[in-house]
Each structure stands twice: as structure tokens, then as C-alpha cells.
Length: 436
Image 1: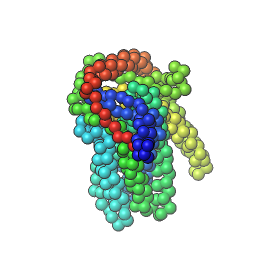
Image 2 (image 1 turned 90 degrees about the horizontal axis):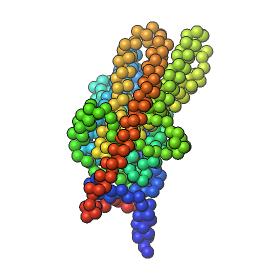
Image 3 (image 1 turned 90 degrees about the vertical axis):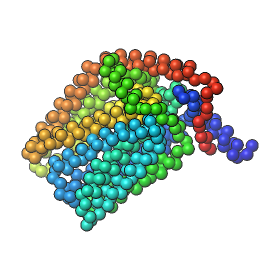
Image 4 (image 1 turned 45 degrees about the horizontal axis):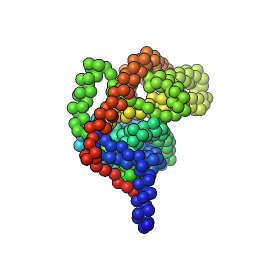
């Protein structure tokens, strides 16, 4: 047997999990998709988040020092930028589900993203004071590019698992996906500000790091392209959304199912979705209470005597809360949506982030008298109350959503059964690229 034949045989053995979609196309999945395929996607997400969060911590100071923005104005600007990013996720979701497919959509919006990073770098060069570049890069190219990738990249990862035989592995993937977001955010959030500070507020050099990181992210994504399972667009997502909205208005229910694995889930003790959300919001309450306590302490003692380490608990609680809320929301958006609307469902999930960005921007304006009057304690108390309200709502709605998900699981099983029965053997085609 030749080397080429051996490699082909080995690749076939690795791709031994088969699944036929509703179009009659058979896809062959890796036995270990997390290592063989999703590692490329996780690295891409980590580098992309490094780029995004490398910019975010310094953006307010950049706007203040270079372009003369005031404090509340720069805060509102940044939160508005965040909101636009997540709202733009719908644009790419529609393109992905109807025309381009997930992978091609990511590549298109990656090009837009890269152009935005390049323009932001140019706007940061000393001697160039062109505010239009900042507006175009942030509110135009970067928001569209980042939002466009955001709604698709998690879906691409989820599609590397067989929806029948490997769906229990999805929780692990989405947990690691969220972990990669945080690793990238930490590296970018620490590295870029330090570089800018060490270079004497040279934002051009600092913003080169996010640009290089995103270039690496795109290269890594392309390197894994031959391994990806690429599902074809399933038709008009917009029409499907309208049908879902209409059905939802009448029945107020979701059609979906979820099954995953883990220590608690194996013992049948996995908390429900809404309880996980409630736990996350409780951590949010603790984080804001810690911040409130530190703020009150700062007011009562001499300036410069409060240790910076007192901020660690609040950030730790934020991290714990995000694990319960964000990783769960990514999992729900993928597992509880029709096959033809995975990207749109992911974009819908991101609308929550957009609403948070817009709401935060509005609250900064409303609470600006508190902030200018050095009453950040009022601000933290407000957010403590908001998190507490949503924690209570999550518990109250838990029973309702448990019933919805139970009905949805049965519906999803029936839908898969109908799809398999509608596919004739003579209609089956094979759509797979084998790699050594």
C-alpha cells in the first residue's frame, strides 16, 4: 500500500461518524472533533478576542487624549460601539444562512474587520488627527466586521459535531469556546495598555498588536479549512424568522432540544438553563456589592492607601457569572435552533449583548451627575439591583421554560425522524474532504 493510500485510509477511519442532512448530503465527522477541527476555531476566536479587547481598555483614553473627548462622552461612545457590533451580527447571520454559508461569511467579514483595524492604526499615528477615520473604523468597519464574525464562528464550531451522535460533546466545546474568549481578552487587555504606556502613549504601536493578532486568527482559520464540515445554506432565513415570530406570538414556545454531558449532567443533576442564568446573576450581585464596598472604603480612608488587590474579588465574581450565563447562552442558541437558522439564532443571542451596550450607554448619560459628583457608589448600587431583579425573574420563569424545553425536545426528535424518512437512498450524496 502506498503512503497516499495509507493516509487516505487513516483519514477515513478518523472520519467514521456519518450523518445525512435534510438535503440528502452525507457528512463524515471526526471521532475527536475538538482536537482535529475545533482547535483551529478556538485559536481563531482567542486571537480575534485578543484583537478586540486589546483595543477596548484603551479606547476611552485614546479618544480623550488624541481627539479631546470628555469622560462621559467617551464612555457612551465605547458602549455605543459595543452595541452596534452585536446588532451587526444579524447582517452576517442572514448572509450565512441564505447565500454564502458560515465559512465564506466569516472570511468576508474578516476582510472588513482587518480593514477597520488598519484604519484605526492609521488614525492613531501622531500628526494625523482625522476624526472621520475613527468614526468609520469603529462605527463602520470594525463594528460590522466584529459583529459579522461573532454570530458565525461559534456556529462553525458547533457544526463540526454530528447532531445525532456527538451532540453531548457540545457543552464541552462551548465552555472551551467561552474560555478562549476570556484568554484572548486577558492577554489583549493586559498587553496592549502596557505597550502603549511603555511607548509614551504611542497608540499606533499599541494598536498594531490587535491588527497582527487578527491576521494570525484569519490565517489559522484558513489553515483548518479542509477539515471543516461546511453545511450548505438552507434557504431564506428571513422568511423562517418571520414564521418563528408568528408561531412564537401564538404559542410563546421554542422548538428545540438540548442534551450535553458533564459531571452534574451524568448524575442527572445539571441545573436547568434558567437556574444557571440565576446563578450567574447572583454572581453579578456579589461583584457589584464588592465594587460598592471598595468605593465606600476609598471614600473613608486616605487617598492611595487602599490596595488594588481588593478589586480581585469583584472581577472574579464577574468571571464566574459570565461562565454561567454566556457559555449557557451560546449552547442554547445553537442547540435550540433549526438547522437552517443557526447563524440567525446566534445573532439573536448576541442581541442581548447589543441591548446591554445601548442600555449601558444610556445609563452613563442618565447617571452622569452621580459620576461627576464622585458617587460611583450609587452607580454600583443601581447595577446590584438590576442583577438581583434578573436573578429573581430567572427563578420565577424556570418552571415555564422547563416545560417549553420538554415539549421542544419531543418536537426536535420528531423533526429529525421525519427528515430521515424523507431522504431516499438514491438521493444520498457524499460531501466530505478527507485529509491525511
